[in-house]
Image (cartoon, rainbow, N blue to C red):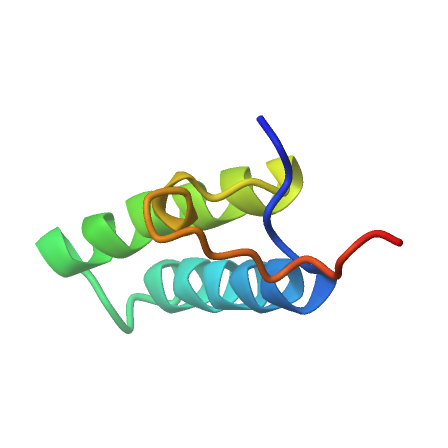
Length: 68
């Protein structure tokens, strides 16, 4: 697994995941939509900590800075 996520990408994903969890916990979003948001938040956190997004691979996307 070659890392393909830059720092900004990872921070944005973590921020979105935290916001999704807060919205669910405060009951702003509930039901099926809330559960889907929690699953997406979990995936965002997992990919952020791993530094790798599998959806970037087929499109050859990398937000990571080039190594010299």
